[in-house]
Image 1 (tube, rainbow, N blue to C red):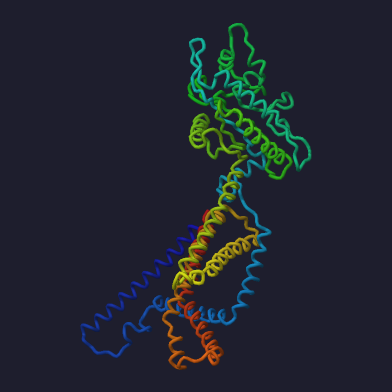
Image 2 (cartoon, rainbow, N blue to C red; image 1 turned 90 degrees about the horizontal axis):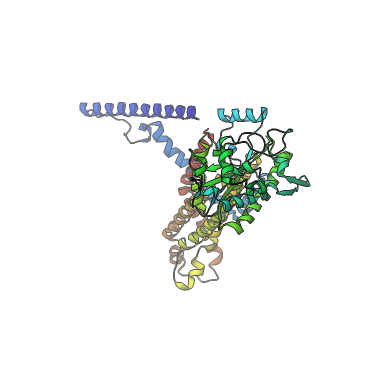
Length: 521
């Protein structure tokens, strides 16, 4: 794309330099003629033959387009029914491509170039090894943020006993989630999809949580050996942590707060590692999706009854696009989510779900915009005479027809690319309908107002009245109807010839701009 830009810029620069040199040469010749005071019979400076190629090209193209649009307008005015039928057939055939319409919601496909170095390396890694895990994660903090003091040591609010009891309750509830997969027609639990690093020696799932120190067991958590409490147990295990899977447990991955001392944590993090597959239609991915759906529903149901004690932020399949400090990232996420959403986030399995939800939410905005534009066109293109004729003067049919043409244009363009097998992206909902609506409404106003001005300047009625001396209704219809039809055809031809070229070139320039944008990597 950069090379194309450089080539076009070079061509434009050379042509402008050539034009400037020719203009300077002509000025020098003209000055020489003036100094010598010679009377020469030559072509006037402003005649077409003395103009440069670029100066002659513009008017020539404009005249050619104007004649073509005039013929088009006259043909449409003479055969309106055939024009409507042909247009409906073309639009319907293009809209049939919507049956092959597909949408790309995968963030990697949306925001990375398939030919980029990073994308190629990721694809190679995923193919030869395995894609990164599907991460189901919860960030939980207590509503009561008062610290806990034990043996002259101050623990953060995340280590309150009542808070950890609730965290363990939620964690055990999620670990026992079982769902019947619709596609596989069999039950799916966390053990069917989770990552188990030391399989087959240890069959436990990899779960990151401060309650790993108690093996996810309510009895161990409440057990008290002499004067030692759960806080002593956490302090001791934090020096040499080991998870239930037998692998080391990094306390900073399960406790949010100070990076220097995990005992000052203000929130805890529960992370479930779920296996992933390159094939998005594989049995593993389908099981994970089914389990994640019920997993989120379970969290939302649990929060309804416990939101007064905890603040839970949760998401499924969390992925970081760059290596950053895990503790800093999680703490920043916690603060942002708490400020933005208050008690909890709306359920979402992944970025794909959020993209799809946002796309569906924009449909209402698009519909409202089109209804507003329909009312706008109908009201402001009307020519009002008095209050009694307002329903007639309103251009309701014109507004409805214009909005329908815009909708048909959007649907037909999507259908064309669907025929070509090009998947749609968010720009279909976010940009294209509004852009086409804006351009379409502008064209409607330009076309109709030019026609109205041409109509106002016409003296056909006065000419008929003066020439026929107010004819009676018996001898008026046939001849006058024919004259009126001819005048309407001529008026439409003149109008379309005047405004058609500018509308065509405007649409063509926008199409080229979008094409250049899609060509950039």
